[in-house]
Length: 185
Image (cartoon, rainbow, N blue to C red; front, side, top):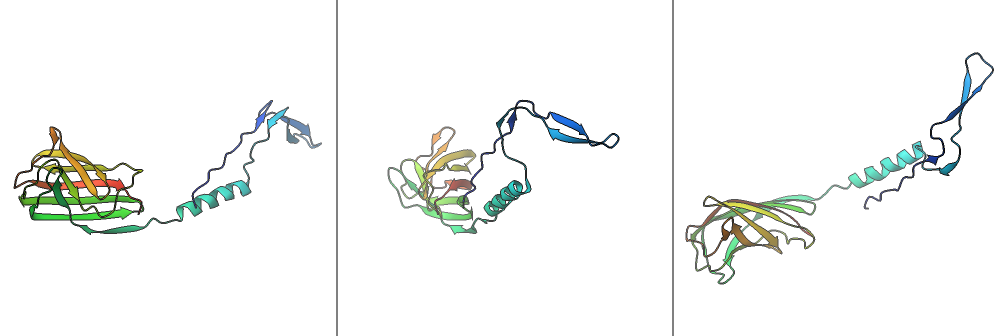
């Protein structure tokens, strides 16, 4: 159940806060009554019923605990012109999923690029990305910062500040990469 905000109305009167003091008959004792003039809008009362209703709605909304999971995944590199058949010296990935947010960590080292040609991409993300949310990707490789975007189960167009990573060398390595993205799962 999604939280449904209530539109609260202010009390609008001709003379806000004006009171009339009426003597009770006892020395220095008065009854106080509102004398606000014309009431344009009654507004919402701050009452126990209204406050309890608000508290109940908030408690119900926050009672929903997001699904939390973690695990491993295997990143794979490929080229956009020629996918290639790279040989990996090492590759590993882990993920943490909280509700629809996914955080992935990974590292990849090639011992042989295997004919990868074109822009370097990565596939194998543990969950497909949501089309409604952006992905943030960052990695370090051979002294350069890499940025990219995620689509589906892939990280596409790995870029350094000087341009896209193309035709990687046989000893190409991503030392530490991470991404945040939304999934529909």
